[in-house]
Amino acid sequence: MSVTAMPAARRRAAIPPVIMCAIAWIALMVLVAILADLIAPTHYATQNLRARLQPPVFWGGSWAYPLGTDAIGRDMLSRLIYGIRFSILIAVLGTLIGALLGTLLGILAAWRRGMVEEAIMMMVDVQAALPFVILALAVLAFFGNSFVLFVIIVGLDGWERYARLARGLVLSAQESGYAVAIRTLGAGPLRTYGGHILPNIAGALVVQMTLNFPGTILLETSLSFLGLGIQPPLTSLGLLLGSGRALLLNAWWIAVLPGVVIFLTTLSMSLFGDWLRDRLDPTLADH
Amino acid sequence: MLVLFLIKTGRALLTVLLCVTFVFVVLRLSGDPAETLLPDNTPPATVDEYRARWGLDRPLPEQYVLYLAAVARGDFGRSFGDNRDALEVVLERVPATLLLGGATFLLALSIGIPLGIVAAIRRNTAVDRAVMGFAVFGFSTPNFFLGILLILLFTMQLRWLPSSGSETWLHMVMPVFTLGTAAAGTLARFTRTAMLEVMGQPFLRTARGKGATEGIAIRRHALPNAAIPVVTVIGFQLGGLIGGALVTETVFAWPGVGRLLVSAVAGRDLAVVQAIVLLVAATMVTANYLVDLAYGLLDPRIRDARR
Image (cartoon, rainbow over all chains, first blue to last red; front, top):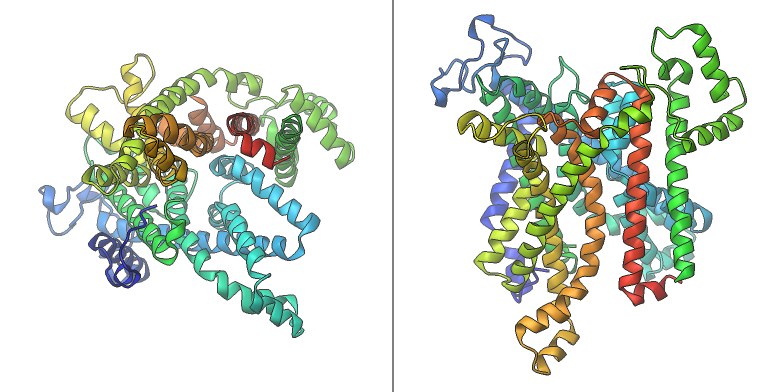
């Protein structure tokens, strides 16, 4: 509810410095994820057993390993870069999966109404009543872990929020003038919903995606941290942090560096998402 | 009120049934339950006896009914780990988790709600910004990272607090703080929003116009009305708390249900996993059900609107 008396034009013009920093950090993470192969000094699995547990350069280490090394002499900078790549990749894929499935179900519910809507909304209620991480763990336990399954599970987190949002938006959109007009002109459901209503509600869905993104990153990193997510030799920020837990006494940087990256990324995404939502629709602020 | 009560009860039971069905489906999809649920070295006679007891030789719909009956009896199978009843293994971990969760809840409530109220009253001041900064910080910091930072500072540097176990109250300090920060942050944010919404309402202007002091206007008129959305959020927080307990109990070696679930998943001790999943589901549904009922009791508008 931080609706201020500021004129709309000024609200739009100025991007607060904090948000600029957040956007810059997110852009940096995306660039690192895309360019990992080019910028990483070594492959993330390359070992140098003669350089184990080297400290970072700012903690008395050398420039050969700017962020130090881990217990089997792997370059932390390279591991961090690839960790960012895997974590960002999973979070992006996961966000898309959840948004796609949830939106489709939401549109379906609003279009068919009746029993279809009842069934979908019942599933939404059940999902909202349960901690998702518990279901995720149950599926991982029963089926065993694989990269694809893990990405799908991470993606399903939050589908019910998209479904609820999309249903509400479509319900009001399909009664508005343009939707009635296009239907009267004889457009089929695909054209009405896909071609006309979806583009009109996309803004709110994108905001929901940015708000969901931090949770998706946290789910992936938490599960990987617990050893139940991404499996070695692949790496992720959570897995890196988890591997550093046992070495806190000798080499704090192994756990702390990936932790800082996760924290800054989720923080930036939360700030950016909140700001985006307030800008697009001030009436939604802080709900 | 009776109608509302019946609808709510029916929905809660249906939700539990759907959860049990979900576990049943996942369990059947993942292979022969007699093999996945029993330890590898189980004698064939026991496997056959197990198959007969769970009706695994019968058609699927009949199996489903038998599964429901077994779950209703609290029979979730046996744990691989020590070949004991899975429910028993889980239940002995419950007190530790309840202790941790209860203390966290108290901490989150006693920090989050006052901060939210203060931020709303002092809107757009430095106090408000500080509180909101804390809230964003609170729910952006991953549990596992906060836990590790606390261990680095208080166990390794200052040597004030033990980093693992649950013997004394000192062992509780860091896990409770780790879990409570995010919950307090979320709660502060929601309380602030709810307060701001109520404070803009005409009835508050009326109260002030009738000569109520600002203190009375807030205590007598704003707080009770803002309490309703906050109660709902508290219900939702329980889910976050359970998720957070998985990580926090593992980081601090707290002997609760969360840590048991993590090790059961890692060791594929499926009987224990299904017992925990269904217990958590039942707990969550019960909590939401109670919150819903409390909600109806608190607010006559809701009671009547849903009839």
